[in-house]
Length: 341
Image 1 (cartoon, helix red, strand yellow):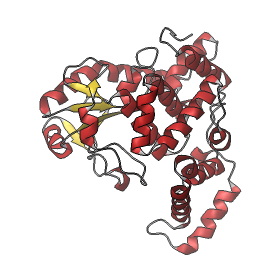
Image 2 (cartoon, helix red, strand yellow; image 1 turned 60 degrees about the vertical axis):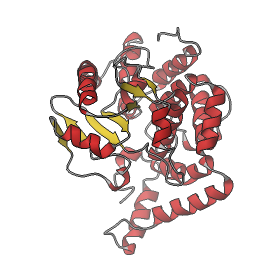
Image 3 (cartoon, helix red, strand yellow; image 1 turned 120 degrees about the horizontal axis):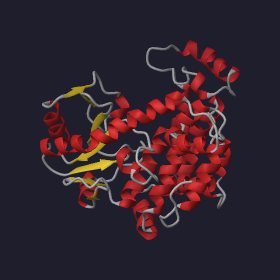
């Protein structure tokens, strides 16, 4: 049902249709970021569309209409290059307007603090605090009258065991944004593909279908040789290889992906990941992403982090928490809010 005029894209959208047809849990469809894509597919196949999805669609329409004006205001207020990452830029790769949900505007600049000060002087509302693991960007800014948050990035979000690529390299190679707004750029195709893959890995290896869809679409935009050279230079060859092979296996049915079979069993039927599945994926994900020596060290670190009690909690509470995990190991992860606490 999707537009398939782009070379090599038809098989991806055919695969997505199969996944949406197999999906049974509407809440899980939204967790995978597919609810906007599912609306036209479910209507065509005669399935009822949840009202919440229709509300999401309206919200995205508001964001889409207000986005060009917002970006022009930001461009006029910020000095220097502005590189738009993820979100609306990825949405341009989808087969229609408003089919990819996003709530953040991720902007990479050469002086994040100066850009933040410039925008704080406009009608943007700063968040109250910044999470400790979000030091790669300034405190989020909420846009008055638009359900969108602006994040000014100092660097891309990167896995902790690797040094992110220099911002100067990313800015120098940036290309005009697909949104067609003067003064707004985006990352070069191979840079964008790898940055998104690493960001998704940081969130959780093979976490959801929407992330792998982004990986597949971005990969098809790249020159394979340039992508391979850059992945090698940045040290993320294994992350990209694991992610792209899983995406090809999921959407196109080509190739073999052991990580998909082990850590992505929830993906083919668009289900919520189980608690035990999330733990296994997080623990062994380091083995899929790094060289053997580095992977062994990362695995020890991950296990130690999971075992160590969170700040403010005593070691004596750990057996109770482990017991809760074991008793509910097969429950959906969304039903267990204490996995990290």
